Length: 628
Image 1 (cartoon, helix red, strand yellow):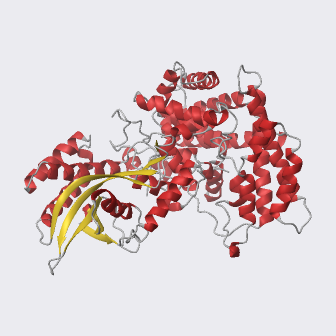
Image 2 (tube, rainbow, N blue to C red):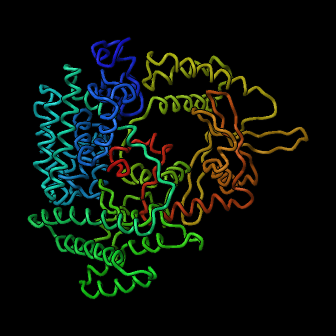
Image 3 (spheres, rainbow, N blue to C red):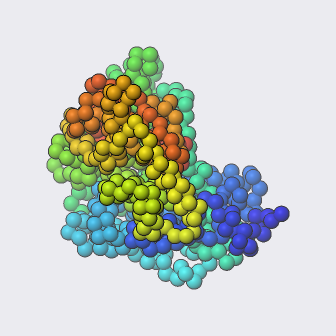
């Protein structure tokens, strides 16, 4: 039997053990390509965490390693390692920009991503371009230059250095530039954690002396994948615990803010007054939580907050007062204190959610738009997908926001680029084949399979995916045979819709619409959406959004008064009907769309972690939920 350490010296065995890559598929797969089509760096020789954790460790150390990789400062180092290996790893670049020592504001970050996407550049190359853009203000330009300087220093000699030596040098570079205000105990804890990361890297290099930084990065990323996926607690914390937790989090935030604001006082900036005002306002909120914690019970939360607010506001400047009055802290406190029996459910995350600051980004609270200039500069409003007074939304947008608002922010507002997985690319191939087959009026199976081969090659999928290619041919053969079955006649393919729902603009495309003739001669239309994923049961689809929205669109945009809906799982040749949740009035889906639109416009982007959502998320490296 080949042990883990022995396996590292056997290249064949290494390929067999290469189970879980950073992006969710084997590193050797050709699908690991960037936006330009060039191969993305692979990480050969590194195995998944369930096989090897620390090659010289027992199971107790494995748990310690997983805990270590949840620490924010350790994840900062991992992000820099990832971006040095792969400049197209946009999520890692975003974390490096948003966290110390760079701390680029999210509005400036959104602008930089926008510029890079327009020029079809990776983010690192886009940053070099951004410092020349008039859209980037001087403060952001200075921070970008700081990132590029640090990136250059970290990259220098990286190809010649051992991976563990480079990791140690990277840790020292980041520590030297951060300059955080830490207590003696906190500084000692940070040194200990980063020292353990060095030892983890050294241990890996002792077992695999020829390993590169890419190998080490993949190894550490595979260790962290399981720790990134967390289930939310099902039990509500007592109100006192929530208050204390909120106080501790806000205290940490205020301390971080002191260092950040103090550093900015030495810069030539026009918004220094606003920085100070926000720091003071956050400190006053900390005093508010301390006052509530020390208030003698019993008391009514609303009355206590009103009393404390009156005292605090009397000691503030007009700008500080406006910031405090637009904060959502009071709302979160009242929601967490509400009696569930009275129908007021606590807000997501309770008080802690209201006071928590996502470490990677600035506070999620709505901006203070009443102060001239501030709202425009600090709000993500300009980057929301607006159309008229509402939003431009699709079924995918709605499902993404409902599954996790923070994921929607990363994907649709900041628009952080992600690489397509092999399965996504395969699904696109199947959709393109079916679309072109019907659009060109083709009839025979030979024409369909010939089209499949052409689209496969154009997609850059090679011979290495022979099994998947074979599965696709078999699925298309079954699909073609089903077309000849009586009872249903396709009438539209890839039909688009575009209509308004309240203030919002809904758009999308239905893969296929059939006219179904029943035995009694009655006819109705069936909306069909192709899927290449595993089939779901009708029970699993009872709360489905996509086809419920399509049913409403068929009535509003196409004047089809009634229709039925189904998903066709192409690989399994199964058509699963979905109950028409839109019903006569479409009230359920209308309410869902309006709730989602309201949340996006209010910029409520709190994370809602779950195993199902986090396991497929491309933004784990920048997500604060995965940190301790």
